[in-house]
Image (cartoon, rainbow, N blue to C red; front, side, top):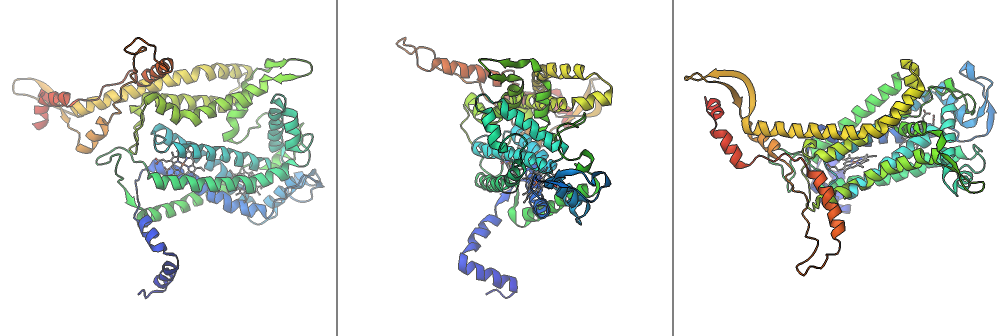
Length: 538
Ligand code: HEM
Ligand code: HEM
């Protein structure tokens, strides 16, 4: 029987819940280790920081649009007519002890949260971690990303300053651009004509209850899947699709993860304590008139802003009767992001269809070994970054003394050309790296040591790869493009579904074309019997 107080408490619990078995089982679970697996953890920990600081903010923030005359710090805002929401944000920043610190940690945590989500997603995409059996967890992740955007957007809108108010005004415009139901939807959301007095209380409920609740539930599901599927691992010696090489959850991983939480918390606190963010008193309360150049949303919303800024205004069509179809808003704010997000949602399924790969994958791809996927990912990021930069076209113009029209036109062209170019270049780089791997496997590393044989020949000594490295570099995804059955069967009857298969085959060829052939054992043997090998031995 246990003698220590902790042991007794554990025993008490175990006898009543039988939890010991589960804990033992779970504690022995092995997790692989790699720095890039920390990105998901950073997302998780910054979310915890958002909840903790957010709870503090709810104690002082007043989600109301009733007008008040503000009395207090800063002097520039004293006596100004503003909403309760804005007044309480000022009060929290200047009068509440630790209030500004909490606001700033909350805001920095939001920026880091979304940055971690996006980079985590990139890690998952470029390593092919979304492949079977993790496709569903990719979808859960996509929902998490969209909920993250919703959390950021709704929080940003709460203080009711000039920037957030103008963000809402743009949102109103976008909602109204939706054909047929637009104006009804806008009235529904704002409880009448924009801005009305309902939107901030409503966003408050969305921000502190609905969205965090959904994120919490989705994160639980997400991590349940991570445990269920087991974590993927990078290729390397001894790692296969049927084993997991790493550390046990307890004590190694628990200690590391627990420590890492405090590192993330500490860095966010340092940022919130030393770096000003969203000083709303400089902007003033919401008023549609004073918005100026240099008004940007937070970084994760910049692509939408840029998309709107790039769209030529001429695309506003008046169709039948009094109905206007504002394609100049609909295309950049609904169609473009819709296409971008659809690509992300369907990509795992698209790739599975094109490769006809039905195997489970627990060993990650090296991005170079899947050049088309890597190229598509970089092309996507290029489009995203170009839109984000376009969302700052005014800042680029003022900083570099350039014409905003030139910049806008340059981005318009880049948006269509850039991704193709990025795709092509990335693919070439990947193939080059594959060739380099091939070279290394066959001939080893150059050492810079030149030796001369007795018969006068000079040769550079190559150091052969060790077992680990050879394994890594030989590990190509050796796939053939899809082969399909002929158009007609033995009796000359045209096969059903042939056209569809043909299309799939074309995509499959595209996915696998320009493949660098993996090193064969014969080639390896030939390289070894080469003169270099003697030099190696020498
Ligand atoms: C794995 C958290 C968003 C897809 C993980 C892991 C954590 C995590 C802690 C395990 C460690 C790691 O691989 O980094 C989160 C949180 C998110 C989020 C807190 C947002 C609130 C996303 C998004 C996607 C995604 C946006 C993709 C669209 C995945 C997949 C795995 C994973 C497929 C399994 C990866 C593997 O086993 O290699 N996530 N994630 N997650 N996440 Fe996320
Ligand atoms: C405000 C983001 C979760 C409560 C904000 C702001 C952002 C934000 C960007 C504007 C801050 C500013 O004034 O500069 C997020 C994100 C969350 C999250 C991305 C993650 C899911 C939460 C939670 C709560 C909360 C869980 C409460 C339990 C608040 C409150 C405000 C606020 C009360 C208004 C205070 C103010 O603006 O000064 N949030 N938040 N947030 N957030 Fe959050």
